Image (cartoon, rainbow, N blue to C red):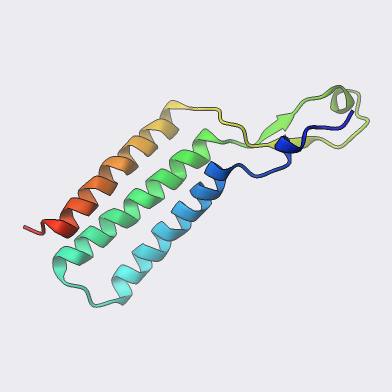
Length: 113
């Protein structure tokens, strides 16, 4: 029995999690390398923290899980893995905190004082 193709594809939210986590790190490093005004520096650090928190939350909400089929139970095929959504409270807290930090960073850009 062949497994469905949807289990071998990477989910779009997992790609978003990789991108958000990487862009948070890039923003953090670039904030220190560029000479920014103080309010832009603060907002950039908050934005980097928000991207890292959202990326971490999505990693926690899409854990690597083993696909259990009749063939894997009988050891006839290699185990296959997938990243379906399995929400956990810590992942949801990271997502909510990341969204709050994102809006705080946007407001820091537009209203510096």
